[in-house]
Image (cartoon, rainbow, N blue to C red; front, top):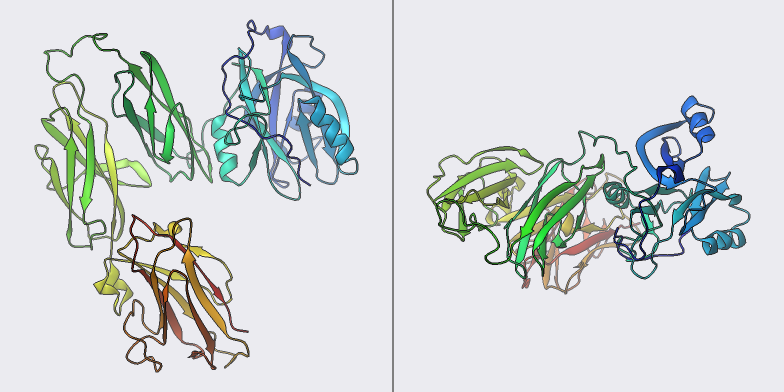
Length: 530
């Protein structure tokens, strides 16, 4: 059963109607609990229910540490709406709504699933349905649906939790923008947030310019450890997870915040404050000279260097740097950074070497008489193509994927860092020892994924990266090949059209022959003989 009626727009704390500060006498505290066995969340502002859950009357529930303020039930505070509550015994779940129409709709549509418990367990403010804004002195509360048969919702006023739950596949519900809908609004300032898990990301945010002129554009950059899997920036426009751009028409301070999460939990918010400064509105830097620290861009050549060789890092900076800080970092833990051996602080270029395959993050900051500019980073993926054997050593970047026999999953190249023009994908399949043959042939196929079609070449061979001319015997070339924007190879075991041998390992190798952009991602799947 799925309760999802109203989707809407960007949550903001800006006012669409003026209200005075909300007296504490009109407020109560909603406490959140979690049941690990059900994987369900529950909130309540009723002291008796809180006590029962704390003392084990209802077993399996424990506090999450999150709390937020609500308007107490029975209040006559202007502008508030009663929040109704439903309970489903078969789902062991509750549902709340501040919308009288939504409460009535649930009664009519789901009388066998949801029991109407109370018309008012607390009170809240309604969000502006057109703009997603909350009244003054209130904060948005988000509702996220678990999208499972055991329907459950989580209610939170924390954007970090919103990002975490959305990353787990939960669906936001409410009014305003579909990207960040709001369920209802509650008094500001009464929330309690537990410390972030040590395994959750920890991020730092910097701005390309902390005193930009109004009307200009700045870039915000984030460095995080513990591999964030979900991001949300506020106050700026993000097209990539770790960066965001912002502009401001008027002078004054603006704070930009990044909310991140991984499977272990939400991160603490990371913010940077930028003071937009009109010309002549600030004091010159001590001693004169450049008005701001350097702003750099960083490039790497080649894109995918082989281990044991070198990559050339080049910094292009504004504001005349007098020196540079060069660092290399573990991309999963950017608190673990060390100087790049052999790189000079006086040079805008640096030669880096690695003997270990994998991704290394390289960072540079420019320094002038004003100070140190924001870091910029680039990830370099070191290759050991020779480790794949056969013909793979001649290719710059090789990605090997083992597909278990009978696996019907779709494999997409974006998961492995993209399908660039330099990349060869090798999909390895091992045929079981029995049976010796199958009655119906199977096939392997590959087509574009989230992008324009690209011309590709696929081969089936006993060796990886084998793009020689086909040889039906498999001795002097692949057993089969296909080329086009959607490639497919039909095959079987012990039978036509291509008879693979039981117990033998084979490789479907794929390369782009006409990718005119940074990455031409594709998806591949196998339809198995049977």
